[in-house]
Length: 172
Image (cartoon, rainbow, N blue to C red):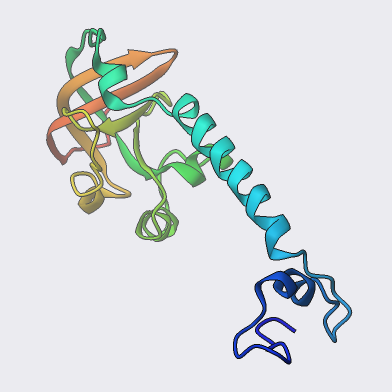
């Protein structure tokens, strides 16, 4: 077994170490010899290290020549909702129970949805983006008016919340 002492040495014999390590255990499973595992581990480590720079881009690479999209200053009105219910159920425009609050408290992303169904995703003004949950969280389930900078891309609208307040949802 591993670590067994040879009859003529006080420590495990280096030549017999592989032989000791490659024995079948009492459970019937086979262990690969340590000498065989080292080259495999080395090759896998080198492969992972060689591929990882290709799989990631650093923020410095992304910011090198990027020009921000133009924003528009807007004031929008809508319901602060959790995204999950809103996306799963077409009739879930106006929250009528505690579902939105329960989902929001559980970490579901928050969005603002207008009465026409336009969805706005809160975002920060800085890059890297930071969580904006603290701004709309007190208003989950409420109809609000938000002023801020709106960015749009591929049908997605995002808003940097400069001001948020409860609004009257009885109007059109």
